[in-house]
Image (tube, rainbow, N blue to C red):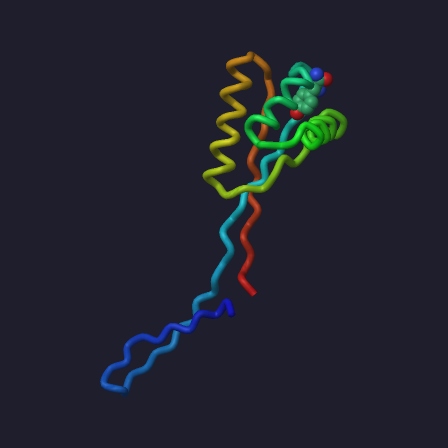
Length: 113
Ligand code: TYC
């Protein structure tokens, strides 16, 4: 299914070239929330609800995982969505003067089967 057959150069029925193109899923970006010693827990939960549309329960779970393990996955998004959300977190953190950080990690899109 991934192998798209492309026929090119059909010249008077004599020349027929076949080319196979391997399709690749788009790269996706994992947003990872990083722990720090200063950002209040309630602020982290509030950001996760506002920016990532998490429920209070899920936001609390993610915040606690970052708090205890050092980091936690918030979600996996397309590049533009991930970039926008990271910038929104940066802006809110700066506005409220907290050192809260999240990072983007690329998840390479594999070949389509
Ligand atoms: N460790 C912070 C505190 O004790 C809370 C916190 C949790 C900060 C998760 C960042 O990603 C984070 N106030």
